Amino acid sequence: MIDLFGGSPESHTLDDDFDVQFLDTTLRDGEQAPGVSLTPEEKARIARQLDSAGVDVIEAGSACTGAGEREAIRRVTSLDLSATVTSFCRGIRHDIDQALDCGVDGINLVVPASDRHVTDKVDTSHRENVAATAELVEYATDHGLWVEVIGEDGSRADLDYLEQLMAAALDAGADRVCYADTVGHATPDHTYDCVATLAELGPTSTHTHDDLGLAVTNVMASLSAGADLVHGTVNGIGERAGNVALEEVAIALDHGYGVETLDLSQVYDLAQLVANATDVSLAPNKAVVGENAFTHESGIHTDGTLKDEAMYEPYPPEKVGRKRRLAFGKHAGRAGVEAALAEHDVEVTDEQLGEVVSRVKKLGERDKRVTDADLLTIAEDVTDADRERRVKLLDLTAVSGVNPPTASIRLSVDGEERENAATGSGPVDAAMNATVDALRHKADATLESYHVDAITGGTDAVVTVEVEMSRDDQTVSVSASDSDITHASVSAMVDAMDRLIEADQVAAD
Ligand SMILES: [Zn+2]
Image (tube, rainbow, N blue to C red; front, side, top):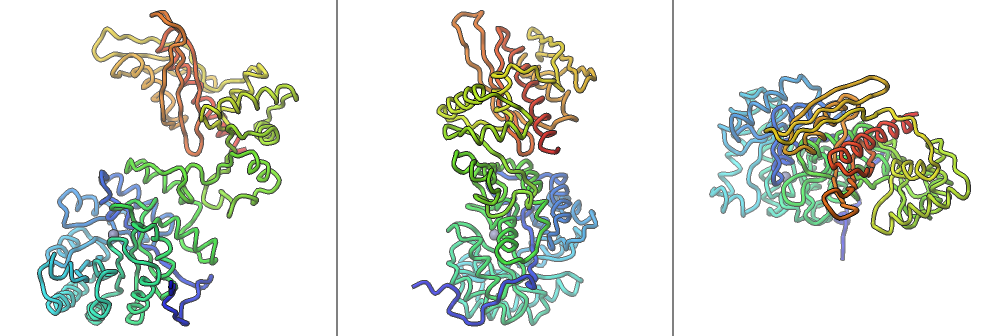
């Protein structure tokens, strides 16, 4: 039997009076994700944006890690943010000294809670651990620090012992205690029981991981049991399956219970900033911030969405700083395609519409998703319209006999000429680099994929280069053919940039 909330009649009602605070640990637990390492500059940028989005506490790192990490924490503490800035500390006095040295407002003091950690990892006794914890809390509070004590592996600890340990921490002056499901092991009912016990003692935080896919659910159970501060990371990055994603908790609280936490309109920018800085890309189906979260493709859904925007959406994309996308594949229907074209002020005859739909379906059958920008390319081709281009390629020279290979280009951007030269690993690379650089201030676009097909045999073959580029929420694939591969590559890229700028303009209107 699932006794979800411990059968407790006293569970806390989540409503708009409920005050929930967020502690973001992207810069500490998030950075512990495999392969992630952030520079002080990146940490500062993320911290600034977290603060602007309304995160209450920012765990900036772990001061004991080394000089580089302390430098990064100092960068964050020197930003003068509204958020409380903390460092993670092990149950060692020296760690607290190092945190103090970074100028933090507080610490997240982690002490062993489960038998595994108390006896096997730290090799102490239960009684000594309680005494040492109280002493460290006193030391930290004496130095003016805000202190949250985290019972490591709390979800696998003996609950009576966890209660005793956390009570001692609060008695010693800790500001709050934290229930930690360090290995993402707990079910919601177990979480509820543990948090309800700790919340009787004093202010309680909750720290959940997603190993069972229960991170958000366990946060909800924690809040219902009396927790009032949620630890999490942007995009849910973190060790193993990651931490709970703060944007998911924020939207669930807002949409489901009317509880306000973060400035939701900023979460998408934040997600992209963190994805870029950490190189941990977002799964397309990720809630709130994934590429497909507000994209409608199937013909039936597209038609429904055109009749009523809420038909297939729980909340509008603008709420989280995003835009709705209609994408087309093999299920594309006439109504959806016509509406998408109309949105871009493209008029087509019935016959042309039929041709556009058939081309879209053909691409869809090759597993290609057709975006708004792709659709414009196809429509232009079909209607033979002479589109006014904002970015035009005027001239291109690439030299491959020199080391390193060099290329120079001349572009016209909104009627203004721009020249640029760059080097690369080969002439194509050099030319692409020169192009991206020349357009950087206009469009910070990313080359997602690059593909070359030779249409005919022989060394004079005409090649088709297909580039896929993205910028914010928009992706576009453009192909260009030429017997000169460098020229085809740059043409495709320039055209893609032009379309991204155009699409953005239309979306903004
Ligand atoms: Zn953790």
